[in-house]
Image (cartoon, rainbow over all chains, first blue to last red; front, top):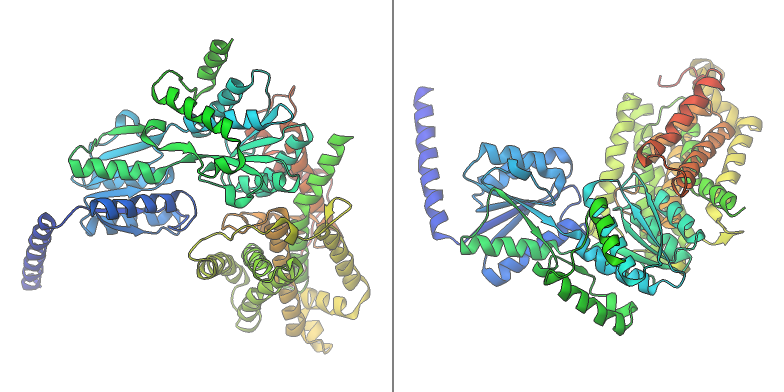
Length: 337
Length: 289
């Protein structure tokens, strides 16, 4: 037995040194672990994978992904990518926060990055958090919603009352008020990210109260919201990605998170040796990481599109600060008067 | 008046899928077979309904196919629990995993790797009758049919006998396994219809999270309704009504209740009614054996 052990460890040593040798010779390797949506979820994960594919095309990065079928798969998938000697491992979505933290502590030399999560000042030195200034994108869609509304009333439907959703909510409201100081709001939380029937019921109710443009930041609840708008022939604003395909005549714009661009930026930094482990990056309009959907110009008159590019400019230049919290929003409202 | 209409419409919208699935539960459990796999059958039904409606352009065909998909999955449950003597709870749980898994697997094959189906055109949806989708009326009609079967037909009596005293039924010459199989298959069919009444009626696309818990709520409604088709339907309507209340109260401007607390209302109301107004709920005596 002892002999076997010696042989095994010798083989192990040889293979280890061989693989570290090949690592030096090869180009950068980056892998990602999807959350439970899978790589073709037409949402976060797909956008992330598109970002990686762009790094392959432009920068010649070697890329791969591991799909998670359930939350319990995260640690194993992270381990697989670690064993495959990746230079950087991505976790897509805040659900993976615990798994990434654990893996980062176990493998302190391995670089990790996570989308939509910040460990604050407890970020391990080998982890990068990537957050989005969702309020900047939501501001633009709020502006459009307000201008497009014929009834002077817009609606907001949130999934749950958490900071990420607040940034959508207050950004949207700020944009709507910026466009029209007299705009009225209907706001409601579904307390779910999956209950499409509830989304439809809330949207129907808001339409009954006179809102003709409804913005949702509520995941799959939004399927119901968009369905209600489609049936009543009103307008909706999509979230996270371009949701115009769900109702081509009714979804006027979408408040997008460009995860692909964020991932591309970080991998590019890694190649240049400026990977900022131990911190959280906040990407916004100026990084091209949040935006209104490309299909917006299909539904929105070109005059408004010009407004949007002017607004973008002032946000990027820092002349216009967009509120992401209730208190910042209150200050913003005062500044309008 | 407008408020009342909205509450009424929301109640009906919410309850319809639950009623179909709950009736499915009645069919299976009356025959003596526990079916906690309703959720999985519902999920598969939701996917297949959406898929067939999209490819054939006929929502009714999609709706029916959803039912048959649920039936196919239920046939596995019937095989395992009636003929191979598997534990019915374990087999039912397996159906939940299978239903979800097969749906996503098929979805990826037929929709270029995507885990959700593209949306159905408005013109291709099931028609509205008096401002409500036709499936709403169908769910009531189905309740009546099943009530009639159990109340007035030989078939109903034999299903009940299989669930209450299978041994006595066998000695009286009733083919217990046949009626149990019938019950389980019918339950899969109805659960599939329930899934379809969500994926192509309430919304117009399937995604894996579309069915998240409705099957279990329908199962609770079945117990709440004392294993009786009309009772189960009323329980589903009650649950739908309390959801409608949540949506209504949450939309009032001058009432400030935390939306987290509010969203617990349907479950609290159900508990209160269950404890205070309902008598003992007795399962068929041979259930699970």
